[in-house]
Length: 334
Image (cartoon, rainbow, N blue to C red; front, top):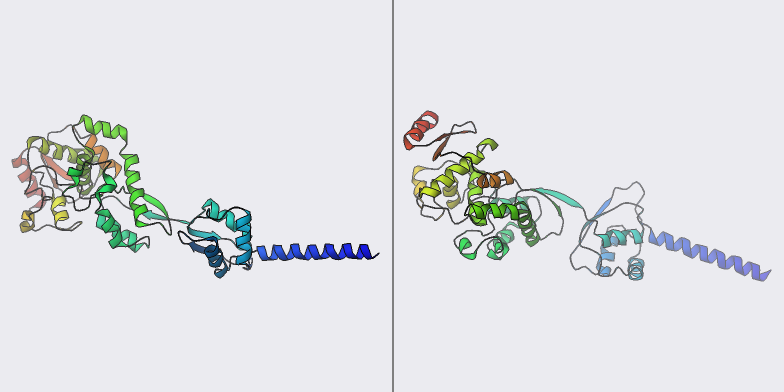
């Protein structure tokens, strides 16, 4: 009889231990609580992670978390970033989420035509990084040495200008400015692929030259149908050694993204000023999209040398200076 009682007592004790363990392993949050977002810092140890989750109310016992982590051989494998935990999550489930890197992502949209400085401002405004740090990193030519020759980058303000491809990126908290730059340059390489690079080579243009032209098309074109014609105008001018006379290059030299230029500003002494210097500027003056890239590599078969805004988003194109002057008077005259 005593043995039966002892067995029952041991069974009850084991049951209580199991129940207690399950209780310690569960999330202390009420079932109707909203998910809890927790940021795990890069390089955090299992102890740091346990303390962070405990303070956020995700786990009941930091010690149990560390023991389970060790048992699952998860130490050193849990990722950094922002994670979302549902109420009722168990310790082993939380560890699984961290090991698998199921971070929370946020969309970051970089639109076409922005300068590096504009992109840096967007990143800081959205809370994804520090503007000044981004700009300092953007001055390093090492980012794009596989895409452009060092001499092509010598006079650029930001060597990465034109290589930060506009797109919507999914970003997690903890993503560094270095990772953001690398992500956008990697996307550039995916779009400006080997097939397009071969096409550029056939045209006698380097990746950097095509990018410089595509950036001008991006800034000038308001409707897609005109991109290839604007590209043709610049290529035609280059071919005969004529000044490109592109207002976006002057604005870039002045540190502006847009706006009206004063007549005296057209004489600013900068290698970016294509009214003053022939040939291409040192580099792109914006970060362009795929449509402008393809326009440069597939220019319209026209002999236009001039275009002027009609003030409705389209342009009037002409072959001669006389025709151009008439268009200027027609559309820009007071």
